[in-house]
Image (tube, rainbow, N blue to C red; front, side, top):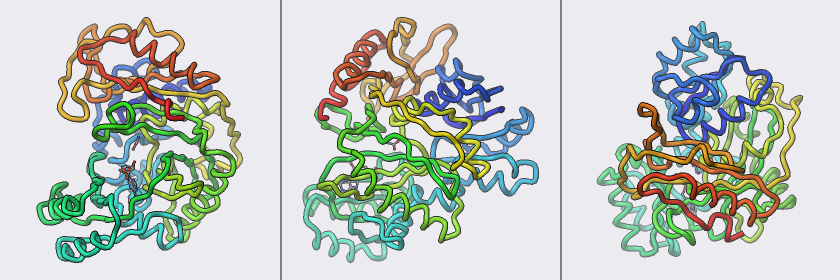
Length: 423
Ligand code: AMP
Ligand code: GLY
């Protein structure tokens, strides 16, 4: 098969690594990719939302399947674009159409969807500029902390959690009246705060049947002990000890089943990954959010734990016969530690020379914000690379990740040393 993978992060490096292992692969192209994806396929200088350039490339290279990594092309309608084109419509796109991508693209849509299908989630209300005063009233009816969510995509910054009522009111005003997140905060969801342990569950579906992928825990804050501002994710681990058989059974019965049934009932044909952010509140699962893609850095621990051929599975999604495909997971623990640029998630510099990649032993490096500059590999973003390791114990995997995190060098390197310590 000829595969086109869209995206450029650590998630896409992990997909490329996994796809490259498939005996069914002929050519793998990554658009635009990073300095690391080049070792698994060919990078193509096409932006992830340039649909016309993607179309021309797909036809020229006789691509058999397109896998979409990030949410932006999905929310913008890349799958719909393929279906509407005579020449492209038979080529499977892995990732939902615009309608399904709304699960991530609009928090208001996803909350209403959960309500319609009795899927457990925090109590909420949605407000606009016109109903700002009602928003203040609703805040007054809640106990702190206050959770405010911009409705649309806001580069992972659209959720604000505040402890004082006055701050929450100011923030609501900023989002609605002063368009803090532009059009993304034209609507704001205010919801009850859920207290518990967070984890991510991943589903691959062909619209009818599904495979439950290994669950993972992401470490979102920049600082050790979960302190400081939120990031895209500083590390991850799979499996998650508290996501035991009993808990996952509740997740399948109360959340995954109703989600897939709900999509079907609403006429939304969903082919792709669903990432369900969950809170374990005293043993009961609640949905915090849906994403219409895999997580990053969760993919860097989830894919290494899948033994089955990923192209078999993706082909099953495209053809609608996923239920007939073999699915097997690896029992070992996988941890990933993300190396980032100094200053991230705030301002940081790019172009730092990376050394030591050839000295890594016993871990897999999934590059993210990297690019080639002549013979050098240099930093090109906030999150630089994910270092993933297999092992039998948490201690063993952490040791391997941290040893290799030391081996890699670049100016102002930063990473968390406490991934998995809380477990
Ligand atoms: P999101 O962008 O929806 O993933 O939200 C970012 C983070 O905010 C989540 O990963 C949670 O840690 C936190 N969060 C979101 N909603 C809630 C909630 N209702 N209660 C507690 N924490 C929340
Ligand atoms: N790691 C969280 C995300 O991918 O949204």
